[in-house]
Length: 111
Length: 117
Image (cartoon, rainbow over all chains, first blue to last red; front, side, top):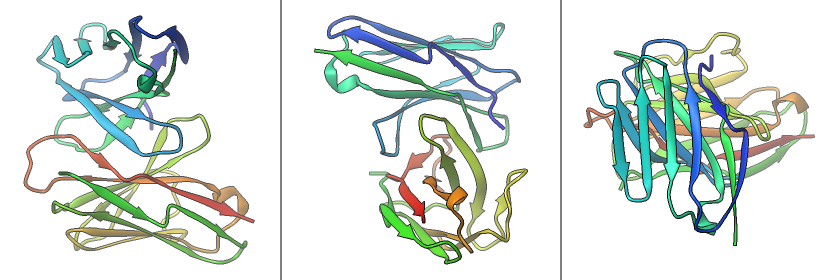
């Protein structure tokens, strides 16, 4: 079953602006991951943040994790048209490699 | 590295026939592969966990006799949709975990679009 809820469901921004999306989950996790999916394609792993980490960066991506609120955010800075995609958070439980995906946020970056 | 392929990318079949989808890890060994189903504009729903050399573990509500999974080698898992019906039309995606890694990351295939007429 899916335990992640993401908001917003959709986001439209101008090229160069930042995009922020949020993910909430219900139960204790080992780690939380963010994936990107271009239309009709598979998923690409973006970043993984462990339950004992609060913030992580990778290029133009910044992820935060607040385990007390059971929430995470993904920030894409200086967005580009190529960032147009759906973004999913996924949680992994302790001693279990299965992932539970959120509903996803569709991001459209306008040129 | 960490490339996963799926074949076919698209398939159209008639009701009542069976369709096999292959998932291969091209440059790493995967003791565990996962099969997901995705409806339009929806999230991924885990169908089953495929373990090399043993039976797959199905999620609640997924019919194991309808969705046959075989993980015969460390680089290949197959999903066979048996006696397909139009409601089985969907986007099927597989993923794999690197057997040598300690991480939780999964590497996804490009997906297979199944249309049952």
